[in-house]
Length: 617
Image (cartoon, rainbow, N blue to C red; front, side, top):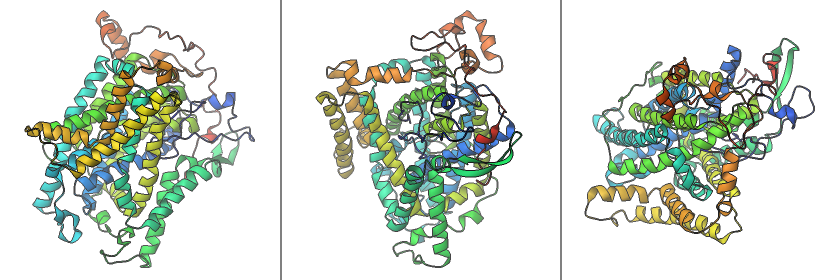
């Protein structure tokens, strides 16, 4: 999801969702830290540099931890629609699968896609249409699956219940992702961006968070005290303590053993908040402070509710395509997925530009963007085949991590990709995540979904909100995006055209808040008269084409690897292929030359102490 940009082109990854705040400024007292001026923009490693192997591993782990909240939240939410609330082992398999596929798609994106240091992971834009599909009457969970005492997770009947739902999600995602592949590799994304502006994106993104309020409330309501503690911990870490550095022991050739201050609260507030609440729940469980009766309030705050899942989970498990059975296709599901795919593509374009600025690369050329969108489509296709119940997209919070570490090397993201693949193959790791108490997850959702909602609204900064035109479009789009889906859910039989397939399509689309709000925003913004400046198109394009002071040659960054670019350059027809490098200088009016790309980069390997995060993590 495209993050909000501040005046200094830094993104906030304080939350493990696409955040909206700005990074705290680095201190000016020590010579080892970056100042607000020229030093702030210096990179220790540019996008094409290769840091030492230990830095790649350490920073790769940090990127994995930064994406932790967003990645595990998706299968935990989907498990409710898949009737898997009481099957911790299958939940762990879903978490393993999404980690594995995220790592695989990350490697594809960095190697053959846009080739920027940008992580791939599950997307909330596809979560809304998936949940809308699963909420249809024919896919609603049987009553007995909601009672833990009646669920036998190994029975063929129960397996058929959740696998049939997963299979329809898989098929819908795979078919819908073909549209993204087509748009990317044919270069049609440029045509889409001409008609989609902030007044379309703002209600679309905001309604993703607002539509999930019921899931957040339901999880948090199992113990509001634990949920409030989790929420307060995340807020304190990410907002009140984010400017407080923590000393960590480090070693460098120049200074030997010494301490370096790291903004750990700003980097990992969600992980720290969840860990703290998790630990407290564990202590309360050991001393039987929390009730042991499943019918009593607060029982789901215990850490031993799924206590046997770690023991039953295999040490090694290799996810594979079709592991949940043969995918099936739902026409209604495909149309719902298309709405999410379009939103995901638009957000990714913004992420590419942000990542290029922070990693010392020139603005991505058209062939790079086309290839990146196409590879994301292939990633969604793979996610559908493997059965994550979701797709993949670029993670903005990891783009923000580049602004803190000052390491823009894509080799770090390659290391992250391999680490996620390894995590996906160790079943015990994913099983541990399933033991997080439900109220702790609910507390995390309260923060994450709130930030997603605000992230959408932040796009309005580019528009003239003193204009009654813009106020009407945004307000009407938001309100209808809440009213229409709510009414359809309460009156599921109201849509009766006589054509079952058409009824299902309309049911899914009209119960997807993101689609309803985005549709009205798109239609009204492009039909009601207004200047480009008033609509925010002028400011939007300016931000997305602003260049970085730290750039390297475009062909070195966005060219295909292994000599493929050089081989294709010998064929004249490749200049007509939208995703092939043109091997011509990219000339843009507002883009400075990239000849001085490495002038502002600090000398690599001179002193890595400001980069290494404490190994104690």
